[in-house]
Length: 86
Image (cartoon, rainbow, N blue to C red):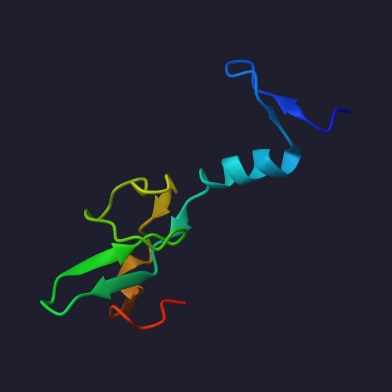
């Protein structure tokens, strides 16, 4: 069995680890954090890259491409800028 997979379109070779990482973005992660700024505007945070998502209930993060799951959004933790997000 080969230890590399070839992308027929781009001619690139992927190791199994890179392939799994690429596919993992398609598994939905729950949105669990909301950032609230000083003027009381609030944005959900992407669970992978932690960038602010400008619109609620979109299917994917516009920064990293992570597929999002909004089922537990009502239980999301509120964080403020400057606080540790983890």
